[in-house]
Length: 160
Image 1 (cartoon, rainbow, N blue to C red):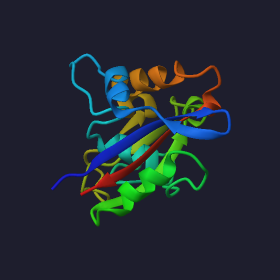
Image 2: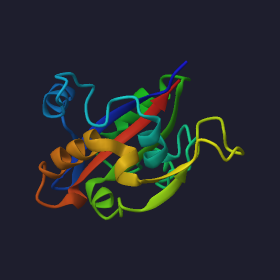
Image 3: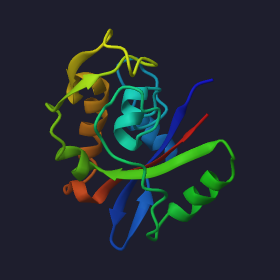
């Protein structure tokens, strides 16, 4: 059984966060394969580990899950959707500003999945290599949504 991510892009408008409609989000984040589940909407355990420490198999440095954001806005509907399923877990959010200040040239010693103790299967990677081109394509599309990257965020959670 795998783990998937559910994402919702929000933009700060005046006094609250507003969701970008899911149809528009899918349209914005269609990539080279002409298929989209939205921003960061593909299965990548490396990305999951970076964004929220989920499926942390490889020692990738990143962020811890923060929970559902508490501020006003369209988040209430998202919170209800999140709480509606016992399979949803590890809710979090991240701003484009936070993504922009990460040093993606940071290296880490990758651990082969399920092989935390063995020395075989290890090698050094940068975060950029681990996350891949698709991650940065989506980050650039996020950045284009507002003049200030502090006013763009992705609310997300995972399921099993």
